[in-house]
Image (cartoon, rainbow, N blue to C red; front, side, top):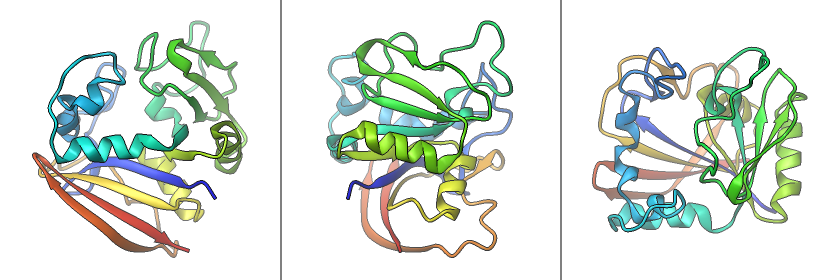
Length: 213
């Protein structure tokens, strides 16, 4: 059966975004440090319409994560903004041609019509919970895997519900000290992980876990 895979960059002290996130600073103060390892990679630049780039151990990890990917699920915070959409709703951080190139499902409390972008990305807004979002994503993925993006809150919900099959955490050797901590709010959840791989690369260590069901 196709998997739900969660992938995120995290600081050594457990944060996936810095404090004071905003539309101007979506990753929070210091949060950009968590992704510096990927910005120069050939595997990242290609989907963003850029040529060239570095090739190292991280490049293979990124390419592998995209190989069998058919859809993405994310929370409203990762898409951008909060509260009701308003009269002129924002279409997210990624511009006219987002790098997903497949259907993306946004878990939110506020209904909105789907937004279709260039390059094969359609954002669908799901208001009836995480299980519905996953079901719709799996149908749209057509037998391929589904990726769970951020933010922290939506990842915690899927972990507590036992819906994640595999986690890949890109551990970056920085301390943020505050912000969105990945593994908060998991009280009472029975979560068992098995480490299946660790790859060292410039500026990051990629650790993959299987969630033991």
